[in-house]
Length: 270
Image (tube, rainbow, N blue to C red; front, side, top):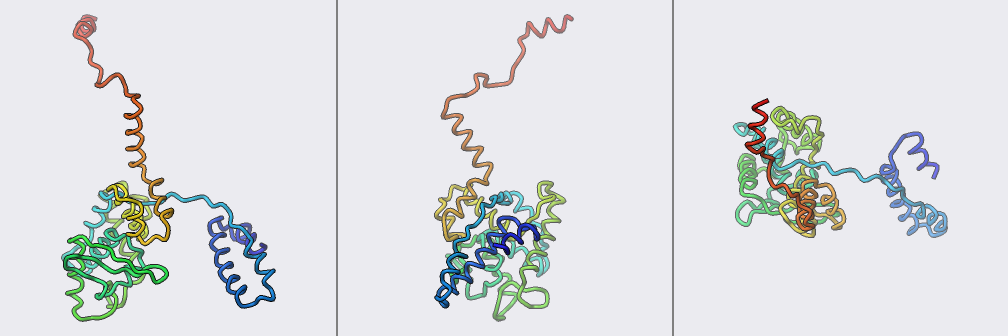
C-alpha cells in the first residue's frame, strides 16, 4: 500500500497507471501463492487490494477521408514510398497492432484470392484477416523486391527488421505532410494504434456486428470492442435523428421563410 500511495503522491501517476502496476504485483504474488504456501495469508492480503476507478479515455481515431489523405503521402515512385504505403494500408485494412504487423513474414501472406494475412496476436493467439485487392497488390510489390529473403516483411533501409519506433517515425512524417492539406489533422497525435481504432470505427460505421469486429481485431471480450460505440459521434447523431423522426417531434416549418409580395411592396415604398 505504501508503494501504491507513493506512485500517486510522489511520482504523480494516474489511477490508471496505479492499476497497471498493481496488476503486475498481483501477477507476481499469484506465482508466490502457488510456490510458497507458508506465507499464503500475507499474499492473500496483497491480492485483496482493490483497483481504483480510473477515468476512461476517449478513443482517438481518424475518419476514412483523413486516412485516405495520409495514405496518399508516400512517394510510390521509390521503394521506401512503396514500403510506407503498404505498411499504412495494412494497418488500416487489418486494424492490427503494430507488433503483429512487424512480425509478419512471407509465410503469413496469401496474396492470391482469397487474399488474407495470418496475424500473431497476444497470448500466442492467431487470427486470419482478409486483405483488400489494393493491400495485397502493395504487399506483393514488397515481397517481389525482397526476393527470397527470409524474415520479417517490413524492413528499414539497412535491411533490418523495422522497429516500433521506425513505424512511429514513418507515420509521423506522413501525417505531418497530410496536415498541410487537411486542417483536421493538425495538432492530432496519430499513432499506429490510432489506425487500429480508425479501422474499428470504420467497420462499425459500415454496420458490421460488434462480435465480428471483436474477432477481426482479436479482442478477448466484446466489451472492449463496445467502447467504439460510445466514441463514434456520427453514429450518435444518426441515432438521435432517427429518434427525432420516430418521436414525431418534427418542425412545422419545412422550408426557409419567404416574404409575401405585399410585404415587399410595402418595404419598397418606405
